[in-house]
Length: 317
Image 1 (cartoon, rainbow, N blue to C red):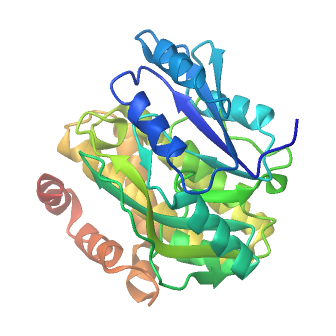
Image 2 (cartoon, rainbow, N blue to C red):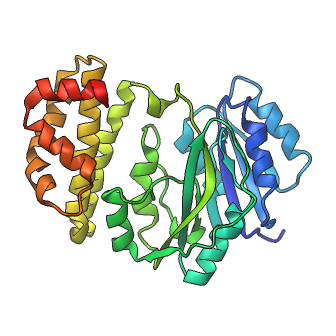
Image 3 (spheres, rainbow, N blue to C red):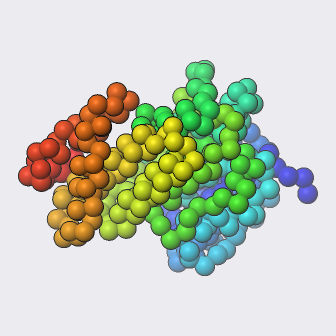
């Protein structure tokens, strides 16, 4: 069977209220040459049955059932089964705008990029956009792209709302058993790219959920501390020109976690002290680095006021 141009991997876990709308948004793409691998991650609601029903009516969609192993395991299984030249991801409660694949592929073709990333919007209700942006993409090499991402002027770390050549992955996979697996993966996935294109066009809808992992406190969120530590070690070893940017990303993660722990009254003194050590280490250079965003500079400045100031700030953040 001839391989499709694009493989879209949809990890799904207990997403019954949304899986139908997600898959319908992919089926409605103006670019038609794709396959969709829906990896049911051991759902206990009707997700698998709903996805299976959808797949039975469109041969481009395939349901893969797997025991519950987490989103990284589900994505990795999808990667192993994918046949497309290009690969992308969509979460089961999100949607793609109709021109998403067409726009990203056209951006890659015109620019010669191996990775094309579009804009992600968030909201509570998906309203498909029936027009394409005429804006030109920004084209970076790996170093420029990582610098923009690590300094957080552009969002490049999400596996959703982007396409990359499957050949970039090689044996690289999402690290299993952690959260923030996207931040842990993208700088490794994109490393072999000759060019990375960022398209200022909305291609992806992220469904905002006040009860989601990113919007609530959970000790598992502290995984980001290890993730950014590993990221910095990686850049020290392989890309020394990106060390300062990686230090800023590490500072940002530790500062955000410190505020979250203070806001929720965490008694994890070891993690609180860990965050404070990193903040003290980098705050002076954060204030003097012209590429650091204002939010981080303000956080660095506030840290000189000690825990009383940070506790007050945590209640406002």
